[in-house]
Length: 223
Ligand SMILES: C[S@@+](CC[C@H](N)C(=O)[O-])C[C@H]1O[C@@H](n2cnc3c(N)ncnc32)[C@H](O)[C@@H]1O
Image (cartoon, rainbow, N blue to C red; front, side):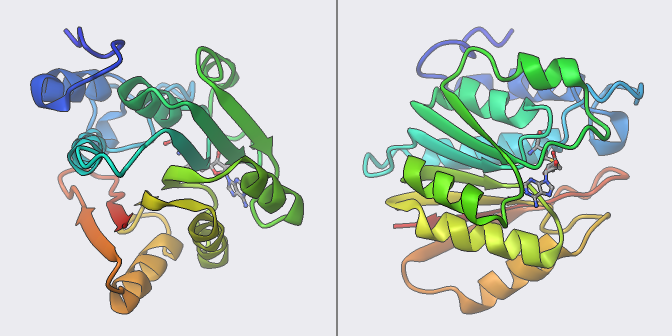
């Protein structure tokens, strides 16, 4: 049982196997879970192994106390699954999440349910709009950013540029879909980030290739 999941200091070290089981139970079989696609849009949109890897990496990084990991910015709320899982692990002081609010493919009940029991500001609109950019900035700075909104190159690049302007001195940015089966924007951006990497940046990546649907997570640590 994930008996530590709701406590303040969730430790992935002690709970890794249980967390993986929990994520698999909420994920479709094509993406590495145990669930058959049922058309209800209530499945997690992450690969369970990749998400566990990222949570583990974040916990490792924030052992260094200069990483506060208190304010979280997310591009792409969808139905809020990843938002809730990360919040359960890290208990954020503030979450700002941006989504254009599409009704396609995700459960409306999950959308509402995952807005509860957390300190969240949901910014509804296109992340390329001046209004959204301004609101993100007014609510910053952010210690952790998860980029999984629009997947066209111009959108994901724009989200990255906004993220960079609004992170705290010691911060983590995570990209989803750096090697996705279904889109090319995040892969192209991730490759260009690796080429231009500078001194203050460390990068990590993990792509689980065991299942029909492939995503991939990339992490940049700024310090
Ligand atoms: C793959 S889903 C996000 C999944 C979510 N991160 C999770 O793991 O549960 C991508 C989301 O980005 C949103 N989106 C797409 N283009 C966007 C844009 N230009 N601005 C803001 N949100 C956008 C979509 O509405 C969709 O909900």
